[in-house]
Image (cartoon, rainbow, N blue to C red):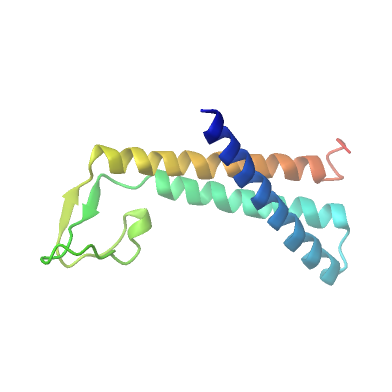
Length: 128
């Protein structure tokens, strides 16, 4: 459990760092205040990850069937379960469903963490 927490904290830290660098660069190019640019970047990326988590979580119980030769071919849009497959569909295994829910919760948690960082960086909120 400790290793998993360490990996998640590392993931959030790297993503927050990349978001901060890109946000500050874009804010400097647009002439925006640095705190405002940082907060906006965290808000945008956090909201994007929450939406991504939602779509990963509402994926239905059906998956595209594999090809005749046994080779796995992803359907178009297969990440979110809306793909088109010429071989039909099959029911997802319990491992696939658990993986989809775990992915959704991960996106949601990281998105909420970035929004919390955005609130802390936002000069209009009054925490700073």
